[in-house]
Amino acid sequence: MLAGKTLGIIGAGKLGEAIALGLLNRGVVQRHSLLCSVKHESSVARVKAKLGIEPIFPNSALAQRSDVILLAVKPQNVETVCAEIRDVLQPSQVIVSVAASVTTSYIEERLGKPIPVIRAMPNTPAIINAAMTALCKGKFATPQHLDLAMQIFRAVGEVVELDEALFDGVTALSASGPAYIFVVIEALAEAGVKLGIPRDISTLLVSQTMLGAAKLALETKQHPALLKDSVTTPAGCTIDGLLELEDGGLRVTLIKAVVKAAERASELVKK
Image 1 (cartoon, rainbow, N blue to C red):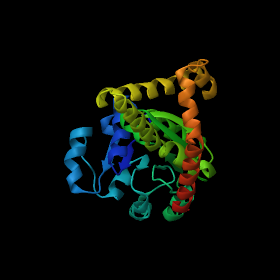
Image 2 (image 1 turned 90 degrees about the vertical axis):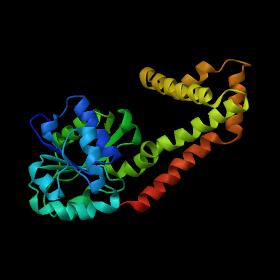
Image 3 (image 1 turned 120 degrees about the vertical axis):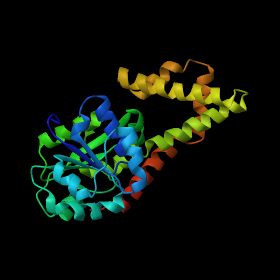
């Protein structure tokens, strides 16, 4: 568990900051047990104001003082960060990476030590503590290390464990997923505008409807098809709308979009 451990976050950008705030607000960590580093001097004031802590430089200094190190950097910066911290790392520490398309083996090889590594794939709703995060563990990590990571990401949303071989699909589905949903929200809101509804109210109607439908699916655990049928009355207006969606190929288009994004994710993977 995180109690009594120091968490160091390398890369306190939007995601790193969101995770830190979630942990602090839920009391999972205390400020005296939270460290962070930033890449640019211009971010120092922001971190001090938002998190109430002083950023640490360089990354190796943060690594020396941390029990759990969260790598919240861009994929292209992972190799550089590993080079900066590997000499000070000990097997008792654990690395948790949120760098997209970077495998646990890629990090393990660049650390050159038997350091436990956990890979996490959250999404942008972490900013409002509504993330969906998938986790997997590297070859040196134990179930206890995985539990630590789960505790971190439960502070900003829901968590599942999956085989790392499925992470291209996770990237395409839940990590990229908010973008697909925003397109649907935008399109439905535009339909409302077409029908004379003010844009702000139309967007609210759609967004709340999406939220309510998602909560209904989560809480009832019914198949989406059954929930859809419960809204669709014989000879009603909903069935006409659904027929237009089917005629336009919405279902197939969404499936193909996710598959295509997964293929691209596999091309970007750092193995």
